[in-house]
Image 1 (cartoon, rainbow, N blue to C red):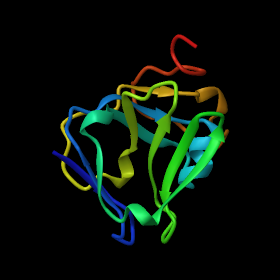
Image 2: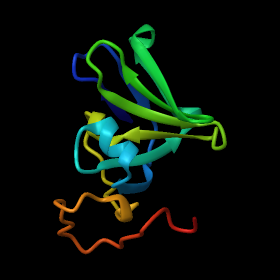
Image 3: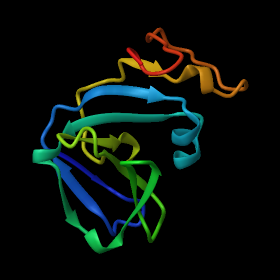
Length: 133
């Protein structure tokens, strides 16, 4: 079982693994939402995902039609994303995961939006946008 929470501990969630499509995203939206040079995200099946504590603390930002970034309104921690076009999955912000996971990032996406000062130092495949887009 994958378990995660926000920084203040007010919100917690769980989902069954595995985490799939784990990627390091360098897009401007992920950078701004995380406050970091990239965000590491991965998907779980929506049917296994549930908020176990603090649902009333969840805030949502619809950054693009039908695409929702969910965060703790108390501490601001980004937790997961939902896409109306992909209702079968929930995209976790892996910095919020509290339990050990076996999966590892498989690629870098949106490297065309990476800031000049940021360097990719691993050998993972890099894509200017999303593969297949």
